[in-house]
Amino acid sequence: MLKGDVFLRKKLGIVVLMAALAGIIFLSQTAGERLYEQVSGKADAGNLVVIDSGHGGKDPGKVGVNGVNEADVNLKIAQKLKKILEAQGVTVIMTREDEGSLAGSKSEDMQKRVSIINEKKPALAVSVHQNSYSSEEVHGAQVFYYTNSAEGGKAARIMQEALLDVDGDNKRKEKANDTYYMLKRTDVPVIIVECGFLSNRAEADLLVTEEYQDRLAEAIAKGILEYMGK
Image (cartoon, rainbow, N blue to C red; front, top):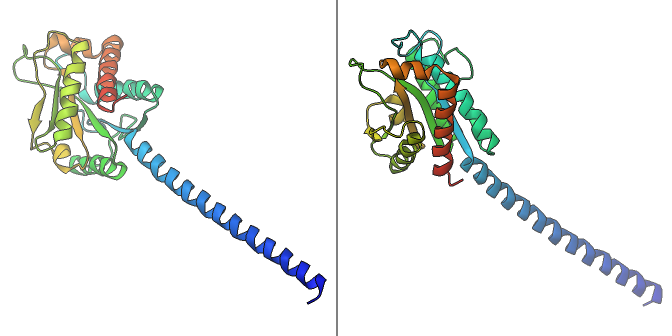
């Protein structure tokens, strides 16, 4: 065999070896990137919250003794809540961001809200509402969760405690429910936060003020962040 042939074969062998090593490195990097994307995806899902502002459009919700529509109060608190959470690095999706509803009928509107929650699969969904009762003296914020959801119960307990920052004398406790459509039809932890009673004159007058809405948004954000472990 000629010396030139030996040299050429050795050179080709080195090229093949380098190509093989490069392939191993590429595969390792690709696997690492896939792992990173999987972990990042999970982290993003765990950092996501859906805020549902109840009612809207032709559905005003409860009408307060002071004439305010529940849907308007819900939206203002939800918008403030979104800003606070985003400032803390939480990804927020709103089911509605303006005065309109999600569909023409009440049933279709509720189905779309549930679809958004089930599609996005957030760590938690919070539906903001205002309460009402036949007796005006009844007042105080209260949190509802699905009876069969352990995580929903946990989130509700944390949220009910956080709302004491707004009204330290509130004796209401979180309450399980197995009839509310949104609680029954969703696949992730969902809580309904009834911020106060529009049927109570004093509370209704507070609920329309920027200051009180700010305090409620801050308290709800505190509950969400605590539940998420932030």
